[in-house]
Length: 387
Length: 221
Image 1 (spheres, rainbow over the protein chains, first blue to last red):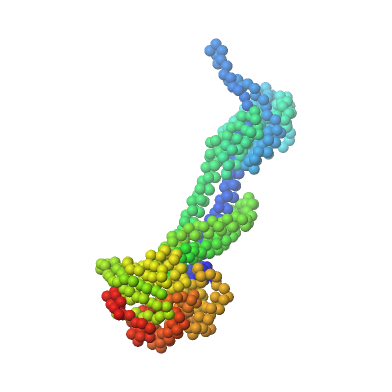
Image 2: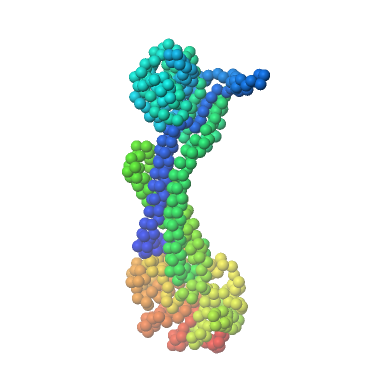
């Protein structure tokens, strides 16, 4: 038996009120926990899906541009010192940066010119499995190439060369077969032929080399600049550029979901805190006689303060634990309903639960702080009027 | 042992200032039973509250065992209320969610040390002393008014206080129960407890060693 016996017994005596308060607070915590779980999964999933709309980092060989003119006649820009990149080396170094987990796709490109019959055409060597991830918006008439000599024709290139799925042509004299034709994308992809990387490297005499590499990075929780900085360190002698507008657009979508969830969480938490504060205040007013009695028996202000704070601790502890468990279960249910359970690697984390409990206890005590302070400030003489 | 000297107290209300105490004095020797009588509004309850440190005087002096406690710190006042002074009220306030025994042990829940088996035994002995053997496990709601007042007295006894301040301890009780409470107070006085009791009942007041009367904020006799 000690001073904590008083709040324990009081909460037991007023069990209906305590239960209702616990229910409200627990529901609040459940909502916040499930919202955060669901938002993290949805945010991650959204970001992964958004990464299918193009790269946000370009790795290119470093080069110098020289603008040449002679006698008033502009010869245009000339690139100096352009060296192709080693595909394996780039892939290996990218795979070893600290933020490697944030890299969704690494898609190398080998760009060259070839003769299709008598017509010059741009040919881009790609890894089709990665392009499919990077360019989820591609729609293909026919199929993606599977054979070594299969190509995918951009819409404009196919029109100018008279190609259709199943057509055959020669590239610098080597016969190839059109597996599919890209529907118009409105981008540079429309004007070129896409060939398999191995075929392109072998056929154009650049084994193991690529012209540039497109990277799609997942940027939630880390700024793109950090990834770029790491890549620059890992790949000296290359020119690495972040496509900021794409990054910002992607981050805006993800951040919007997160901000929305955060706002809703804060509102729920605020309402729950108000409930605790108002209930505590009512409890202090109702128990003014008890406070007066305790003070007349020599209870210090700190003692009275502790009694009311401990009630808030009890409520916070139970609501935090029950709310976390409820929130976890609810988020599993919600993710299953959203058909995203497979994407969710949710595991019940006792440490996370303890932290949530601690946070809720702190919030609960802060909510009860003013009422508890009011109780502690009651002088026996004030309570005597009630007595 | 305890002395109140020239105590004054004025309350400010809607109707202006009301002088409740105007130089009240009282001397309580160790082991004495002093009763304070007076008409309603004579200031006897305010005087008792000031002596028991529940209310601060405007001026005057309170001396307990040679120590001037008029302007004692909050901590010191808490200490006095916790150990030396005990107060019982007309409405025998008990915490309704604690059993009779736990109410008796209430002073031990903060500052008087842990509730050991020995302290529990003493609480039971105090309940026996006030005639509540076997009722320690009951909640106040299951006790009569007289029994509740006895619990309040047992609460004062358990910490072995030096002075008991009693404000109309029989005021809310029937004659027979009031008589029993008065007998209990007389027994406690015989055991050496100093008692200051405010009452409007002259018959009960006469049981004290000394009776003083208050009028117009002063101790008249």
